[in-house]
Image (cartoon, rainbow, N blue to C red):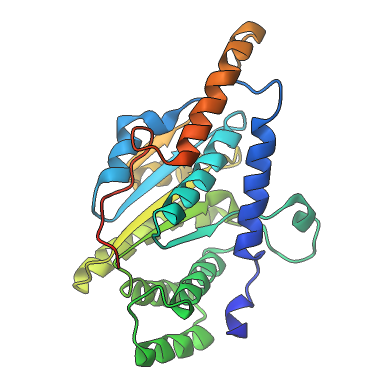
Length: 272
């Protein structure tokens, strides 16, 4: 499946490992500040526990960027530990950012193509219910798809072969204003289309953003198209408050990574 890897983004596992490394490095800093445990909120908990397709929007600030991205990474780990399928798209490493490849700036079309390629890889590993005939037709559509609408339709067709699946996406990958403004709405369409097709697939989408450049209209559409929306802010604490919060911060992140149900709940869904 060589054609699947021909996309303008770093390898998925490599990118995830980079962010896991950065998260662990950030945790170990001696001056680590107290975190905002927004994952404790009833809104986030409800998104995690409901058994319907839904979109969670997490918008952070420059100061809270580590919590926001780390939440996405932790969520991927939790889903993997639960043996559920998950697709993701994050910015790649600092080294990759210096590359001439457009790995950190994607159009909506490229982002959808990236998600489709991951889903096809899951199918290649036998993690979906797609038949060999259907897989062949999907591969042919992959080779000729070019527009945003065609990639979205293809993603929808592939997702019908899952009983449930998670998508975790860093919105800062979007290269243009139009992408950041319309991407959440594209997933709203995806939910409706799956329902119209009679599919019982449950798609849980988590979009995270901590870009200070997000324009007001993009931010408004981001919130309007989210079933659950959380704006994560961090107030800069005093030196004494920061010191007191270090142990609590590490405990909160460790518990989230361990997937304890009282800190974040995954929906109780049937295994595929």
